Amino acid sequence: MSGAARRGVFIAFEGGEGAGKSTQARLLAEALRARGYEVDVTREPGGTPGAEAIRALLLDPPEGTSWGPQAEALLFAAARADHVAQRIRPALERGAWVLCDRFVDSSRAYQGGAGGLGDEAICRLHAFGSDGIRPDLTLLIVTDSEVARTRLLDRDGDTSDAIGGRSAAYHDQVAAAFQALAKADPDGFAVIDGEGSALEVQARIAAAVDRRFGSDLS
Ligand code: TYD
Image (cartoon, rainbow, N blue to C red; front, side, top):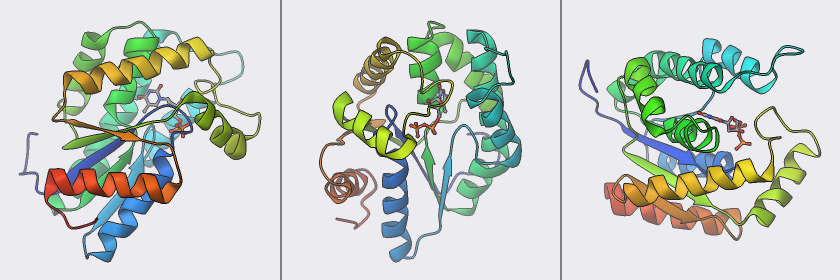
């Protein structure tokens, strides 16, 4: 990361829809705060006013608009560039823990993998937009699609956004792309079994975070 030294810890939560990422980010934040750490919980697309405005364009496009794959990838990268510059980088420079619900690996899995743009194109956009910043650890929460579907129905009913509402085949490709990314970078990823209660999953995450950072959560 360019600029001032990075002192905090950057963790991204990744996985398909309904994997429990937001709940787990919140639970990990509570555990860290209870130990006195400053924690910033944020999400993508979004996390700043500008990036939230781009989120609305992506997930609820103007009437009659269907973004092409390149425009979609550029909008995600633009939202991320603002989020990194305005929020993530300053928090890390202050020494905070940043817990981000989705980050660039979502673009790699959705737009690069399922969307067919390829990993290199997404990584180039990320290098340009956000200096290629990587999380210190990416927690990939894996659930079987039945569990995720039930959680989504509980959460969203039968409404879903422009990307969440894509075909099962698209979401299967997303899941496969995530698995491939984790396999290619075993130091950067921890694959977390997302089955069971939120507290069971939280215990797995706390153990993975302790292993990686020597924290004392579990
Ligand atoms: P979100 O509410 O974060 O997803 P979830 O349903 O998991 O809670 O919605 C974000 C949607 O945008 C989700 O369908 C994944 C998609 N997305 C991408 O396609 N590329 C990206 O880079 C990011 C960050 C999200």
